[in-house]
Image (cartoon, rainbow, N blue to C red; front, side, top):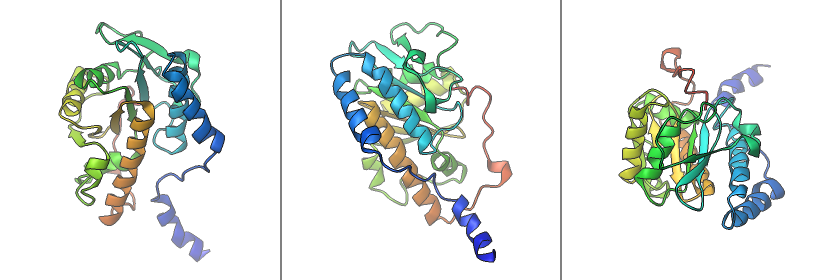
Length: 246
């Protein structure tokens, strides 16, 4: 019993265990969808569902948190995930289409982070997908005053450039402007103070892989600093109701 109890604190500090790799789910399905998405837009809805489930399975999102979007072939519209929905069990019919040219009020059932997504696409021509998640390691790092690439300098290039923006309310124009400026300055992974992270890439696969790799680097940095034993209650971020609504 003592041996078991002694192991519990260590177990609680580990990142979410990666689920067993499935050849069909993790290799064949996304490969087929990505090929199909080059010729039609409808497979991109399925890609959003696939990667939404993947992020949840890895513990990078939970409940209704996070949001994902992908640019359509014509370049001026996106598919984006809905508000207040578990991204681990999305259905293609729930995905919404939005124009990048019309910056008016978005429909009430789409992600509250529409301004941030639009800002990312406007900031850099090569952005084809945007992923916002709440990974525990990437969220804890700024709270601890640690830099993501300080301990592992080569990770900055591998992640495509890393940025950090100060806290701003979820869904606000201020947050959109801060993240857009960071992406425009060359960051492909942006840490949001007390609000997770945003990853961009030419496609959903690269954006999600960037988020996953960033989380691994974050936990490595926290472990090296001896700061993975749990944060004091006063340092735990308490997001607003909007920030968890997707």
